[in-house]
Every structure is written in structure tokens, then in C-alpha cells.
Image (cartoon, rainbow, N blue to C red; front, side, top):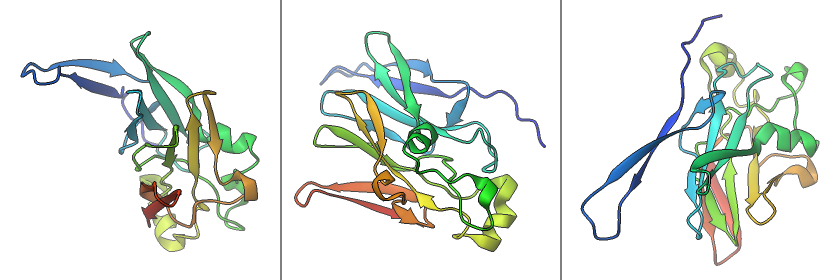
Length: 196
């Protein structure tokens, strides 16, 4: 197993007054465990900023592999971890561990490629469960049967709770696919995803 140097994810927040030419930046450190960002950034109508970051473990077969959801707390001037997708799905009994593979596909919450989007006061995002260097050969042989697929998550700022939107029927958003982005259809109350 290769050893990776310690990596800390930092985010630069650019602040500029409307119409002003001066821009300042501040660097924030999230969490030393969750250092992988592929997009997973969003903002709600109240100006709150959200980030979803993957665990630093690159091995999808690792029990540590997870993805955390953060909200920026302006009073604390810091990002605060709300929870992880694995914790939410396990609590809803909608998580299949890799120990059952190859008998059945498993869940691997590696990262979030989708934007975090607001719909009716709640925030939505989906996981991308694809391609990892240490399991790449296995994935090429079995993909898309390797993973169950992407989960769609909801965060309610009013209750400060996350929910696995696929838990009602113990399923996933897109079987065998990881979502790369989502779009909200406000006219038909629908969420669309694109992935592979």
C-alpha cells in the first residue's frame, strides 16, 4: 500500500463588494480526513455556502471511504461538518457493504461531482461512485456492475438534517452509474441527473 503525504484541503473564498474593484481572499481548511473535492459546491438563497468532500482514503474497498457534507458558519468563520453520506445511508438501512461483492454490487461514496442545488428551501446533491486507482482493473472488468450506483441526498437547513432520498425503497438514483451533475426542474418539481 502506498503512503500519501498529508494533504489538507483549503478553499479560497473571494469576497468583493458589489461594484468594487478590490477583491480579497481568505483560505479555510475543512477537515484533514475529507480532502477530495471534484465539484460539490453550492449556495442557497440565504447566502449559505455548502461543500461535499470525499475521504482521503483512495481505496473504494476501504471501510473509511465516505463523503462529508459541510456548511459555512459565518458566526464561527469556519466550515462545519453536518454529516457523511455513509452515516446517513447506513442509518436509513440503504447501504450495501463491499463484503458482499461479487455476489452483489456495493455502495462506495467516493466523491461528489454534482453541484449542490437548492429546491424549495432544501439542498440536493448526488454521489459519484466511479474509478479509483487501486481498484481500476477490477472496475474495468466489472463496471458498471461493480457499484450499486449514485445516491441522491437532501439537506434541510431548517432541521440541520441530511436524508438519503433513495432510502424509501432501498434503492439508488441511477443503478450502476455515478452522477456527474444534477439540474432542478422548478416547473415540474423534478431533479434530473447525468452520469455514467
